[in-house]
Length: 363
Image (cartoon, rainbow, N blue to C red; front, side, top):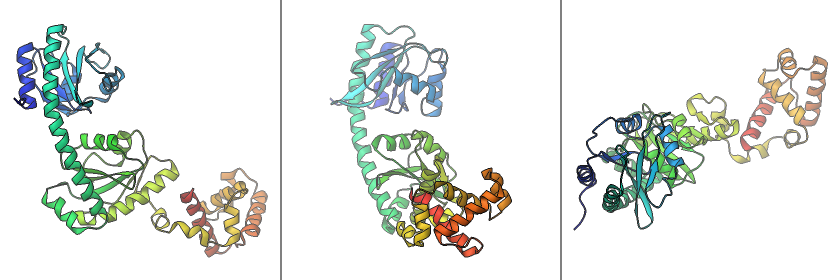
């Protein structure tokens, strides 16, 4: 006979044990929980109300090895969180970890109760395996739709619209420097169903989210352990997502170059145009300037960049570099000789400034 649904399994176990029971997914997000009797600790209350465990609790629980333990793990109380003592029974099927079943140690969980909980965890594993397979099929379809959508496929946009995805408008695209199933699962676990689309494109995690939602670039960077994230512009329609994606990629390049963690298209200035130039653009600048930037002239390059960033203001540049004006004029003449430019000409200054910024983006 097939097992009951997850909620029925949890309720039946709770009645037999006379204590609360809770089942989490791998991200410690509650999937089913019985009636909560007795005094609840902060962690259980926060998990149920907030749909996932507080970060301090996650760190403490995984530090006790629940992510790899083959059997039950007794977690002592952590008054500093505060979190009372509990028992974790991993839910595993065919070597695949699917979630966790939790019992509070109030009173302490004895051998008989532990045996009943393990049997319930086995039944829960059958249910969660079926759910996981269905979820995997859904994620594969979503992955295909994301790739097609960002390639400009109008049919993919229509399919997502008909499925009522991303109801929050406007929406935006965020791109992270890295990807992988674990990272994508983290993103999906932190957003309500269909309120965020996560997939992998060209080895990067791509997330389509409502612009008014909380899962924007900074939150994604924190969620993905500080990964660089670029955020595109806001668009009103899914069919315009390719534009936001292209701009998110441009912002990602800037985030990586500036070691900024996060960069947003709306906050970019000249980089909007510079990131649109081909990678071969540096090959097209004059040979003398290219040689100056190619290495061995770091002091002169730094001087040139400071001079241009200060709009050719000699006094401000000398102060920024802690140089006497005579020394600054000497360096500027050397730059002109080596690069073959005339820094009194606006066009040459523009050429040098663009070349410097492109060199940074190419680094």
